[in-house]
Length: 419
Image 1 (tube, helix red, strand yellow):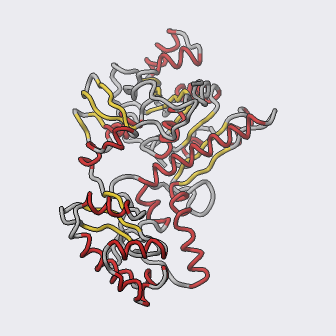
Image 2 (cartoon, one colour):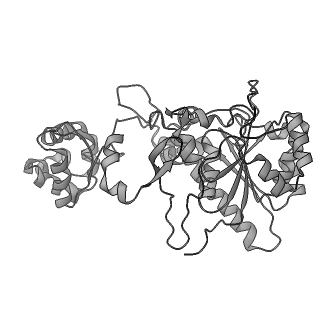
Image 3 (cartoon, one colour):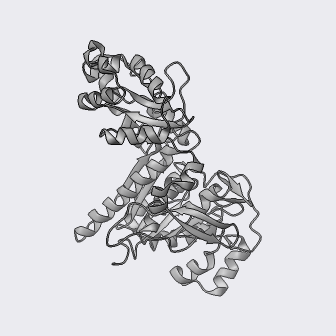
């Protein structure tokens, strides 16, 4: 096994919550040194995001891993000087602050490119760096609504819904796309001698729109607005979620003619094969409410386990709709999905494995999510060669924060607000 592929890479992360910081998480899991700059007081609000256990966020514990926490009060000029020196030491700058924030501090794209030609700057925002909405802020629900994803989610006769419920799916997808853009930019920079770094521009709605965009093409050609249809697939029947006789839910998706013939044999409905309404995928899609009702009656005569096994025996695909309690006992997830960690403060719990899985140089969890300001002094002394006297002076000015000291200042400023 060789060392992780991003070993030696230095990344500076500016931003909060999920989208931009998830880029740092992914890069850190594959060997990059990720220095996260946080505000005094509360730090990244991801530390207070989601369900809490003994005052600790599990979203922070998992997504803050492999990072170092440096607290800077960027309202102060001396802290902004420190920030500039840190940027100069890094290969990648992740900027998911609200558009215009870093520019207000003097860190424009032009000045960064002029002084640091090899730097890769990753901009994460709600609407991107171009277009009429470029200066606007926003979060996952706003991006889902703008991209059309929310309008396509929910029952046909119900209101639009947020995909994933409370899970910020656009944030996580943006993080994955942003990490890909980062690696592509580094590859382009490093493969050609003298090549410059470039900027990466990724918006929260970008990846969601990439999924919904074919329906815009369909509108261009047909003038029809594709409407939400519950849990149905874009085509085919039966598709969706069905309740079994033991009050469990399964997901079923029958797409092509051969699959439909196998299903008809399985449920003893030979009449389906001679019904013109079910003659091909397009016809089945048109009449899928009827066929799904008929299939639902059969599903209720089965247990979930029997239905899934029957489908597998016929070369068809069905799967369980798991809740968190199901995940806790699932043997496949136990074999490929997580590892147990012993946390001195919270106890023992499961943490997701690093993905994707590389055969020869896999990623890893090298250290737990840091306490707020835990690495401020170490980073400044090691990366910037600051003396003890300089660090003491900056601490006295309130420009820095370190773990274990009073860092309660939180005046409500939004300088580090996500997007």
